[in-house]
Image (cartoon, rainbow, N blue to C red; front, side, top):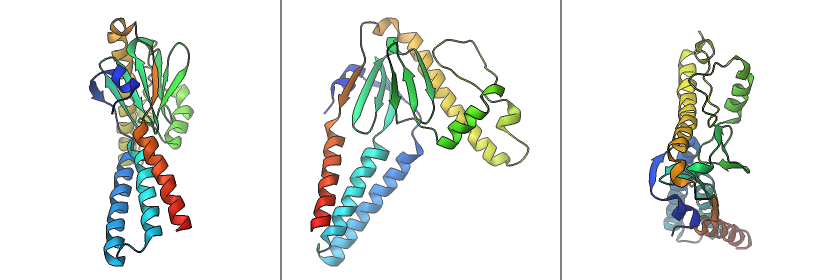
Length: 220
């Protein structure tokens, strides 16, 4: 069931990089499901507390790790966070950067998207190297994109790790550039739309069910 933000966004056209936590979330849900089935079969459904805790763990993994994502849609950017969705029409996007979350600025405020995230270590590293970074390409005013010099991105030691980090940084850079490009291309077509923030009742219900499961496990 689509909420107001999803309906305003229109059809999805592009999905941006997914946080690594999403894959951990899938693993957690599958592991919880396997444990629940194993316990129910072996104990005849008697271990109610363990089953309830496992169910709560799976539901929380869905809400916290699996659900967040950021997509480009026909009318704008859709940021699906844990419990709420935010739609930003392309005309309202004035800037973006990937810090510990995706930070998208409009004329009035900054919105955060959990679906594109950078570790605190990577964010701190970017700040340390900010003065030595070399800007590439024209300054659009929409996406504060920076590239690290080759001497920083690929040091002589730890080459494989440096290459891996460089690939990840390029993915973040692509996200910033792509959002800026889409905002410029479609600004005129979405000038009459406004940001929409709406609750998504499915994760809200999942969170409520997790709380109930924990209570049942405790008092059971």
